[in-house]
Length: 241
Image (cartoon, rainbow, N blue to C red):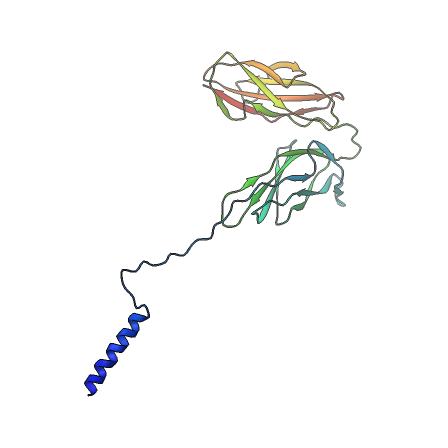
């Protein structure tokens, strides 16, 4: 009788285990679903405005050659934080500021041209989004006329490789000026990385230059305004194949 009760108990216990899903080796385990991270979108810049003089900075009490400027942009979608890149167009140095909101205060030099842009970042992804790039002058003491902004290469793009289809190439650039009084551009062009050969001066934003296959060319734009203020662009280069 006790043996019968024991057998009955084991049968019931085994049935209970099976009914509770006691494991079949053939069952497919359920994989956890990873959350979907949406890439951030690009911010839109607000202040300092493009191609203007910024005169709202707070002058540094300990050094009146510098002022604190409040950089502002529109909040972008799917974004957790921002990197603000601010480039001094005279020295080439870049300041990086970070923010979890759509603004940040940065201490910069007065009487100096800058360009800036914002990178949108999101947690869980390495993808980023970059805003447009704007230029401005941070107001300086007693400046009545500002030098033009340094020119930016349009074609050939910086670092480009082009195929020779003729013996000349058209160099094209863009620039702007707070005072809107640019009078001429001088173009330095050569196969050495500090070009001194001048292609001459022009009032246009294009000029033709002679080229040949297998060479790397370097060029720079010197922009001049009606007060004889000048600005030198960065060094641009391209290769001809």
